[in-house]
Length: 314
Image (tube, rainbow, N blue to C red; front, side, top):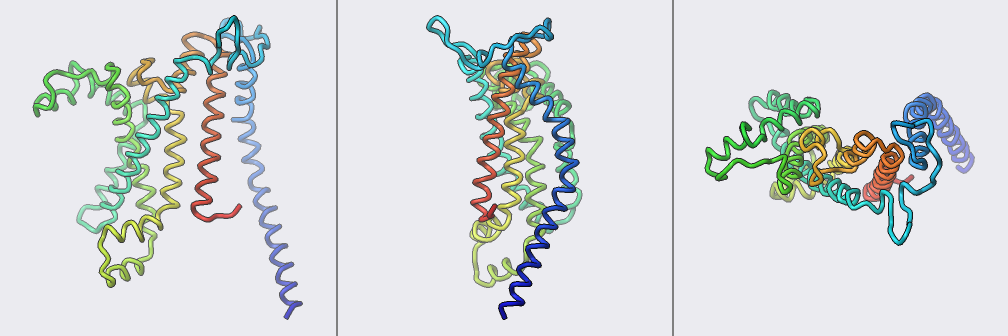
């Protein structure tokens, strides 16, 4: 009994090694492409963040160490990490990320539950649901900028007609409304993405669980929390991580709707302002590097916690 078991163990180990070798063989070209396309610009950005480079004299940049990040001089702190505008953009970015992703997850699950039911015309509604997600972000942002315009926008026209407001609202110019306008447009555009992933997971759920729950007389709400939600959790975690990473680096939507307004400025918009408008390549590269490190840290922590939640061993 022991010898066959030993032979089986050795064979499984050999098969596992061959699979790992094959995996690395297929991944090597991809990793080489990533190092070439993403690695070099990242290293270049890290180097610029340690210099006083600007667009006018890019080739004459001098090494200044971490001064673009933080340094102390004459009793005052300078650098990206000491800039109130930077921390305001950090707050705006995380507020936008948490609020928009939470709304998209809730609405996406609701939409997926509706589309998972059997009713006439379901295929047409599924196709129509993908239209907002398929529209390029810049196009949808400009479209909503016209709709939210305080002079000729249809949103104000409808709200005035319904008696919900007394005067037109400057959605993208008002400091108290601009961030909510950006969140509203982002939720409209990316909720179909979450709904699509959740719907795909629901389509693969076994029907035996629901039949047993129906026999036991469990209410639909309890079925959702006890059966559906645990089974679709892996797909939901994938949707959340994609949306979180996308929301943390949001640029085009915010820039088109609000330009450089401080009330809705995100970290990406802040970095672009330093790089392009102020032509401070070193300072803007430092802001971009901090943004990259923040996103990487959040991604690693999220994936680690997600693996522990799902019970996946490394």
